[in-house]
Image (cartoon, rainbow, N blue to C red; front, top):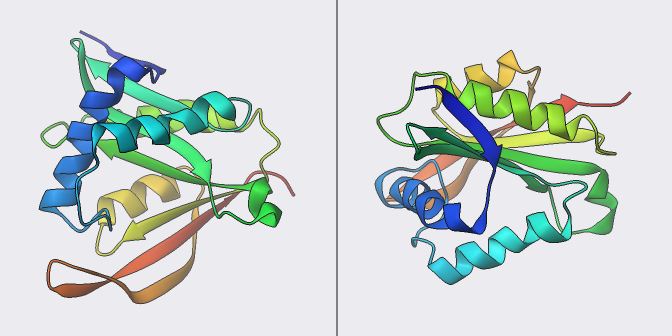
Length: 168
């Protein structure tokens, strides 16, 4: 069966939470310490309805099962950052290496290209060669490393900041 990319819906939120909360509990990829509740995920989901002209949530389904999601959201809260957006992709454990992240990003970036956004940013916990490679494939460039910026699972972690120029 083919991989299907579609807009995320509220009915997808439990599966999105399952994927995300796995990374919260089992890795340092997310700097969240506590798993997200259903209510927190629902509140998060509202940004896509209220800013549909700028922000998108896409999901990937394989044989009817949600196996990944990607989205763009606010880069930072201050108004002057409104021309920039953060992008994120998560693929279900056991489904990596199937091109799911690549397909999600391909479609997400095509949607973003139709917006007024000027720059995209991705923050990646290091080490994560697969994610760095994926982002570089889509034209992101490393613009900095924040050394030991987060503390999780008893140790400090650094993050890479990657940037993609949309408009010159």
